[in-house]
Length: 552
Image (cartoon, rainbow, N blue to C red; front, side, top):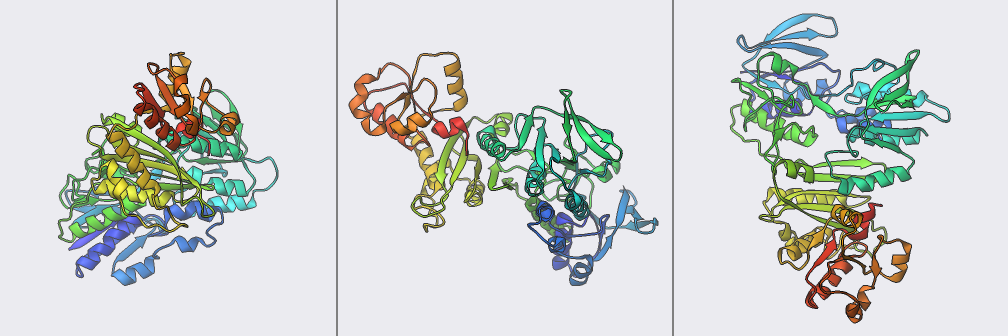
């Protein structure tokens, strides 16, 4: 059997290796238009910043060693120009010598990945305008940064996506002033504001200018370089270096030109076995669909973890297997300077789009037990289905311990756990790494309290509306007097939690009372005291004043 694979990075090489481990006799050929195969794209920003010194360390397998180990033909610098479904052939151009030739296949895998989105405007070919997708992109960007010098230089990042934010370290190390231009309400729009609000506050404290709900409409050149970025509002932003980080799209042109079904996102349509609508043609990686475990939505997610798993499944099936590629919890993580952000499952926006009534639990808890040095606050948001309690998603931001909690919740989603089941998880405890009641356990305990109707939350947005509309209610701050004086929510009354019982006579039982503290624990205790004392119209501010201010 002759198998041809178009694309030799994550999905393509994963598939090829699995085919060979399954079938020693298959003839396998990989066509890759780049100079490299099987490399860690996600490591490129860290090479540019100098955190990774040798770019060759990102190459997981060079073509020669990969070919030798797996007995696979690897044709690098060969671009596939077209697919002929009827004759089962492909047209290929050797980019080294310009030769065009054909090859035939019994089974074909399209693993062409994705490509950066570039706005169609004059000046994108300037020597100081960059994207970052390949090793060659990384080499070019680092060389340019290394020779850049002088005070007052400025970088403009167009788009608030993963790669642009990961490059902040490189730009700041070089002493560049950075402006980020994002067309939506906030950076990383796949996250919710409840978490990204903390990121905005942090980046502004680091001297990063963030311009949201604005687009770039053009680049103004000075000789061979882009000198300014023109915005939709008519402003000009000085730019000594411009980076396009507005996202990626599936590289699916070969499939669509051949008549293979492609969805509205441009992703190649596949079934649960990763086969396209054409017999003997499969697809894997960023160019094709993946199904979301929670929402059921099929779309491209541009995650190396999904691409590798899809490649493995597709490869096994091409070799005669019948494995199903299970839906993904879509777990992503990003490092932005000293902060880590993670997301698994779906966001609140995605839940609304899917018609799911989602509940939110916000919590701000230490990465490990507070008495052990180095504990850092993790700001977390757990989403659950109000109808049945199933976990919908999780987002977090902090300096330590974020990835562990995201991975736990991802596993819980896959296991079909309810939000309150998290309270019973038996997680490892040692003072340096966690607490006897881990942050994940506490999220579950809060969910238990909601389930038992021992607490009821109000979101910050609703409280803002109530204050703005001057509704009749009491806002009760149960922190210490010192905390209250350091900053409070306008219109609130301060009664410390330890003094609440002896001051109940000062409160009106028929009046709505909203309670807050620093993170939520003391306000929950106050809620129980008030509820057990006959107060009926009670709410706790979700995440308390920490969620209100969104400050790291």
